[in-house]
Length: 118
Image (cartoon, rainbow, N blue to C red):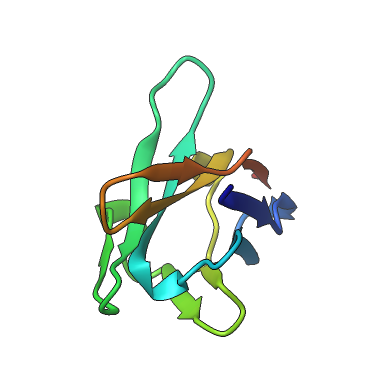
């Protein structure tokens, strides 16, 4: 069974930085078969896509993340990182990692809380 585990969330002041990690594991897993997305969700709202990295290395960012967030992939470690700089209070949310296999099967992590104080 594929497992997705996020880590790295926490409390930070506005203007600070955090690096989130998303590690994908499972028997005979081939990491390069997966696109990986980061979403975030605030209470009462739906999950919104923040950034995406495809199997071939292409990346996309939601407008508010451009220039502040960077997604990267460590293939050997089966891990995708989300470096978040110049954080703002409106970035406060639970951040979720979603690994999407080439056949469309999706695997979600449990989420990690990011809180940015003013």
